[in-house]
Image (cartoon, rainbow, N blue to C red):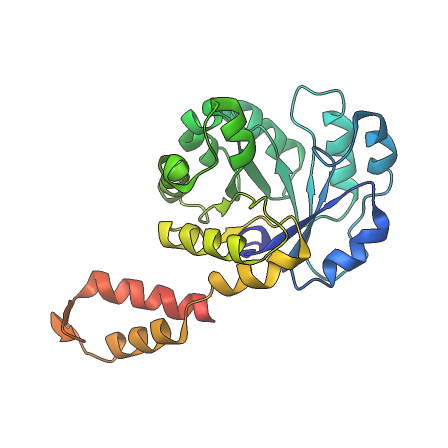
Length: 263
């Protein structure tokens, strides 16, 4: 069964201790809202924030980012997730398949998105992807902090490709890309989303409403791509030429994927 967690393209984070922003986030154009109990909430405010999280403020999928396993808040976060009517839980610092599987089991049938954001997490990404999660997501900023590397596309290319491959091998949805920290202009997020899509990712985490429309647009096929896909599928069977390029069954598979993404 395909869940909302597997098809989200541009979810928007909102601090879980700011309920005044929940409805605003839902009205931003995002296709999901993430209530963040982890990085966005100070340690002393986590219990009060947890008491306010719920999914009733919108008809959109609402996801809950809980605190990592092993933290003082993790067990209570799991209980809140089970009670809150959320579409999925985002598990930070996903590094161990057994721990991830235990979290998924504790949440019954609620989908889990495993956030890979450390070197160990990347090394274990294939096992984590096969541990019962709905999807992987890339915590690129934390990943760079863990490795001491720059937050640049060329530096993070191997990590992004590994998450796409791990997802494919596990038979789960392609991953969500990490955040773009520049928020004054939507262009950087759009460019990062286009790069992620070219690598096989199918969504991107957003941290500001200004990023949402640009990110959603970049993960949709262009009119030119849709037109090409239709002409490819109308070309018949076997090996033929379309626009001066060879078309065979692998190319037709890509064309079907483009039309499916276009809806």
